[in-house]
Amino acid sequence: MEVKVNVNEDMSLWADLKNGDEKALKRMYDDHAESLYCYAKKFTKDQGLIEDAIHDLFVNIWRRKESIGLTDSIIKYLCVSLRRDIIRRLKSEQRVATPYDDRMDIGFDWSVEDTLAKKEEESIQAKKLENAMAKLSARQREAVYLKFFEELSYEDICEVMELNYQSARNLIARALTELRQILKLWAFILIFLFIG
Image 1 (cartoon, helix red, strand yellow):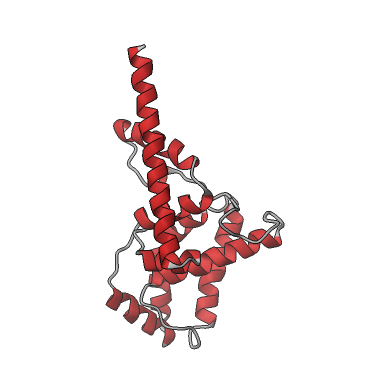
Image 2: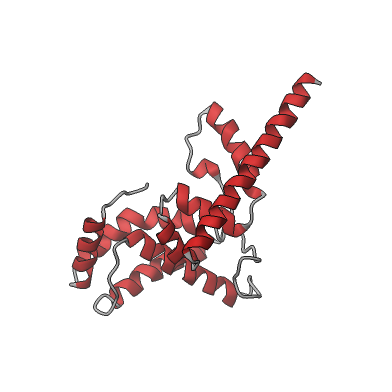
């Protein structure tokens, strides 16, 4: 479930939370928990770790409600916080031995079926895209997911992934270029197989 909210609604909901409104926290959870779960699954398949991280995220927000900073995008704030916590948890469990950087692939998996309808024609296209996405780096997959499936702006992606603006644009541009090349090659091979 993807919820589209405008900036004013997010700021109002955030202000209500900071003022101790439990309904605001519940609404945030109801609006974003499913999306956060899907996002977290891109980093790990450990369902317990994901559930704990999401639970702790909302508990910590409630505990720190008076001192927490302002935000104009709740989903951006939640993604940044959840991502940092999951990476920290994975490191502490020694699943990740080195600091997270562009050269490291911590397993940001891609499952197009989570997002696309399961019609026959779409599933064929989804499989092609899934195979092409698997050839991208973890950072590229994450950036493409945030841009096109969570519909975050480049500025928001910068904050979530801790990148500067140009790096985020370059990362997505390179990913799209690679996807185009991979999908063109796949189409060429398919045509060659049918002709030959």
